[in-house]
Image (cartoon, rainbow, N blue to C red; front, top):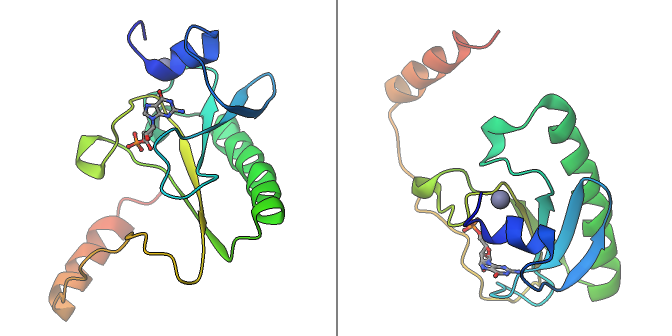
Length: 137
Ligand code: 5GP
Ligand code: ZN
């Protein structure tokens, strides 16, 4: 936590472009944005990623994010928005303090969010499905 840049931002030890905050969350501008208005929603408590959040926090962060996303859409007039968060280095997480990205999108922007689709066999899909389904409680 001592070296976490978001904890430092929350504590006011590092500056940020703060859009809004309440007791639990802070919305700030990403300083290396994908598009202007790219916003980070950060819980004030240090959770590393999604799997560390409780049910209550998960719901609250979605509601908080939705509120800010609505304002971004209204003010910026964007055509769409990517709302995403990365968990783990393999998934592109670089700051290991849970956060949600709100990325305003425009019809002809050139942001690349794409992945190259696989072409799995029916068997691969079925095996994967069975593995996941059998673990759902
Ligand atoms: P991640 O890759 O972990 O999902 O996203 C981390 C995000 O934090 C990146 O989009 C990056 O631009 C942003 N970021 C890194 N350092 C700072 C900082 O000091 N201030 C702000 N506001 N954003 C930062
Ligand atoms: Zn932190």
